[in-house]
Amino acid sequence: MTSEKTAIKNITVVGTGVIGNGWITRFLANGYHVTANDPDPAAEERTVAAVKQAWPSMEKVGLAEDASIDNLSFEPDLATAVKNADFIQENVPERENLKRQVISQIDSHAPEGAIIASSTSGILPSTLQADCEVQPERVMVAHPFNPVYLMPLVELVGGKKTDKNYVELAEAFYNHLHMKPLVIEHEIEGHVADRLMEAIWREALHIVNDGVATTEEVDASIVYGPGLRWALMGPFLTLHMGGGKQGMRHLLEQFGPALKLPWTKLEAPELTDELAEKVISGTEKQTENVTMVELEERRDQFLIELQELLEKYWPAATVKGSK
Image (cartoon, rainbow, N blue to C red):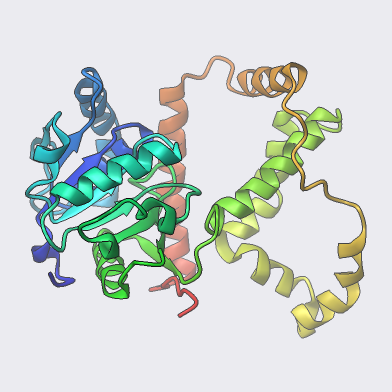
């Protein structure tokens, strides 16, 4: 199996929720044949509807010459679904026992050398491959972000038994999908991006719970503040520029001591009924008279235009891991 696109022809997507359908859309848009597997009898109808809804966005981004929604087929039997796959993307619900069981079954029936990639947002790859008896070395984490068909980042993490050659093959494959694969050398719960998002999420819950700000005000503080800069430079380069001509060196000298101040509450607050209602009613108020479909269309168009800006200001940028 080589890293050339032609070496991977048939892809199987196991689990067709929001993430699974996002993967299916991205694979189809790049000209691949996709077999979808999901035990829910209503899954096929939902998947076709999701792909059709997202397809105009893919047309704006650019479709492969042989891209077609007709390249999608459903197979309810897992063993049959993976038997001819070159690449398997697993997306079943985030329950450790379920994922281990499903990945073990995939490993038992997938062809030799077929890569098994899990979209898990937090489970360690070593845990996921623990029950695999055929080729645990081809199992890894490939964690994307919603909407998968537009968001470029995918975190690649191998487990204790993962062969680095398979990670390199997966990295090349995701590059062919016009993604930005980030190879993470050391496995850790939540990987990298989710750990950062979790920290902000916990702080946001405290702020709402303590009555400091509403959900709308918290969102505004990110959208019109650091979020704009993070989209271009991330937290480190943003702070580096805050240090003036001496950059991060001066910033740490000036603001480093503030890290000891009790500004943050990293332990999440108890999710009481009262807090849940604040969060739910707040977000519902923010989206009053706007359907989820309209929100998704707005988000997708924004992401398309934002990535065009990224390409303008970071031309040919690649994500580099800690190799």
